[in-house]
Image (cartoon, rainbow, N blue to C red; front, side, top):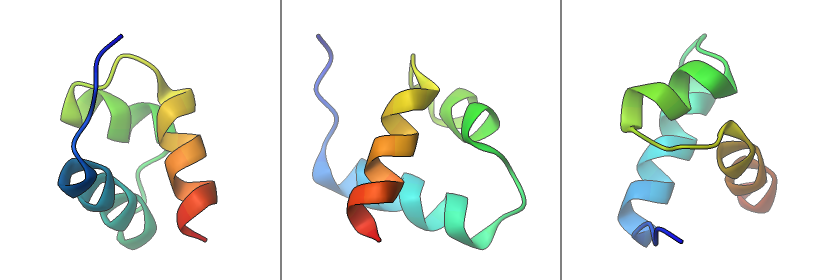
Length: 46
């Protein structure tokens, strides 16, 4: 299982919240294997 740094998670969430890209495109942009990770990070942030 790949560990992602807190800094990366925050960057991904902020990018998602300030752009018009969806979860899948954000995950692809940052090389994250699963867009469900992005979903969970955004939910935790909110």
